[in-house]
Length: 461
Image 1 (tube, rainbow, N blue to C red):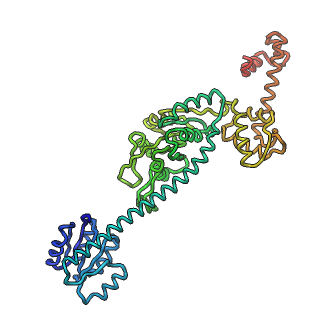
Image 2 (cartoon, rainbow, N blue to C red):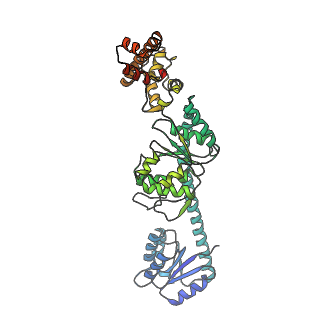
Image 3 (cartoon, rainbow, N blue to C red):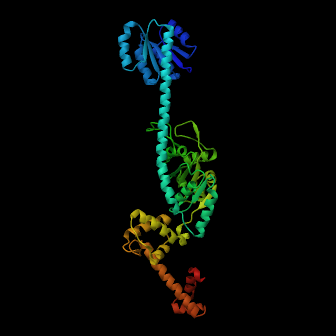
């Protein structure tokens, strides 16, 4: 048996001396001559078992042990008494105030045996509490991991949306292929809706950490204090409502990947804590003094210009250098219009399965309308538009109709007019053998206006 701390309480010095001599060989023994003195020792020492006399001035043994329960209910409580007190002590046993009583006088070896068995019970209870706490922690971790695994599976199924044949996207794919095989920190930059989350998921799911968790946290959706608790966890009692220790996302994602979306929205205080993790992998839970070590790959994303944010004092320059290890820029949809038919077809097939609506595809006019639009919401807006078109479709093909936003209809109409004007300018240029004055005269516009129109139409420069 391991060595424990025992506390003996009695107002008779001879009894204190005798019991200390009995148990000090196997255990660390503290003594007190009153209940008040005993309570002071209990506040300072980690006591496993207390032995107290029942009849003492000012405070009886039973009264003392009731207070011991408030300090630490796991302490084994034994009381010394004469035969005349047995009725009251049996009641105290039944109410749970004491573990056992020992009558005076006692046999030394019998007393040692009682204490040995009591401490075995104490060790068993401590071990059971430890195992229960570990089991609760495992259950909590599994619950969290199951939630994130379901999210990860759903995102894995969506990663195929990272499609594109345009030169801009081919460059993105080349960069991704270079970084997939390692755990370097990645910074994804681009407008909202360009697919940064899907790309982060793809990098994780194809990399060396694919068998561990991929966890996403948008830094702009929570206030500073809640985001701090979510990322770093907290210690019980750190704030009102913190009734138990809680792991943060960094601990849950240990060995895996943590995707910090909209990292530019993180407060300066949290930027400092993130910087420490990136530097040495250490952090502290809220309200805790203990440092914890984790191994987490960071993928960050932003729709803002971080160098500008640094100049305006909203983002730390040293943190920028830490997260900008491997930057990847995702171009907006308007910079890769050649990918729109491919993306529209992919979104259509996905939405048909979801909505159980079958069509043969987009008509040429519908595809042209889709390609003529600027998409301020990027791929996300295109996907929503395709879903709306599918719901409102009435024929075998999706034709232009009320599913088109007003701005898209205007854009398409303007585009058709511009194409007609371009064709007419080409015809007149061939007819007049490049004489701009004659072309302008036939169009009814000035030569300067014609030159400006030709400059706008890059195909005629």
